[in-house]
Image (cartoon, rainbow, N blue to C red):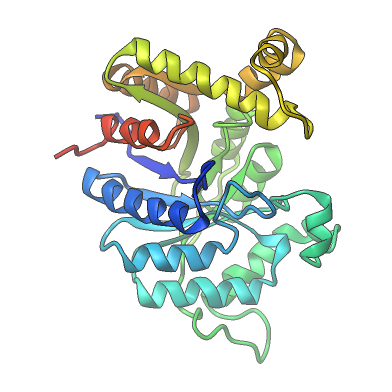
Length: 325
């Protein structure tokens, strides 16, 4: 077992050859398994216009998973708040909290979670990110006592759904500290500012009604297998899949093309994104996660299973399970 609680960020993937329904069925099954394995929580992220990710309607997905599980905490990691009116999110997550009391989290990010064409399709104001701090404050008000005269979130008011600030820079760290909220750092794909952001958050944290002491969740990629050689093989498959995803630029890449890109600056960029990825047997990755938690001064680690194949991804989480019984 790890020295800190383990949670899961599930990307709700739709793999090649699967339907969306297949991917969502696998998402529910993973949540049921994670619950039996003792993971603290599962989060789903708002992404749009990504054919391989089925969590765009995040609150709807959480509702479905919650109805098919019984105890594990579920939440958004996160809702991209500038895409939405705070009142709507308060109503959505207030409804979830009333249906599944004590089980719902609400992580908040300020990025669009998509490309610029889709931003326009979402009717998102490009300047909406500038009001993120005020929108978080307004949302917090709707979930407690409304800050807007004559407007009440129903459901939502009084549910006090716990909020988390997500980020990969000093901005999120400073906001989480100022509001006295937990801070989740996206080190599983954006490793650069981990140490300084967490240090800033801990130094500047102000206690709030929700949280008396700072609380840090750090993201980590993981690939575990029954033997180290197999885990290393799976990691190499993941590196190549990342090259195809991020560097193909709309064209089909041969294996030789992938090898050339891996040896160049693009490959270095992919490897940098994978910097905080534990690879090995279950025991080896647990040891790595303990070292990572100390490095990040994290109170909790949220893992992303980075294996490209679903069976290998599920096996990774099983091998790292806090309570495999």
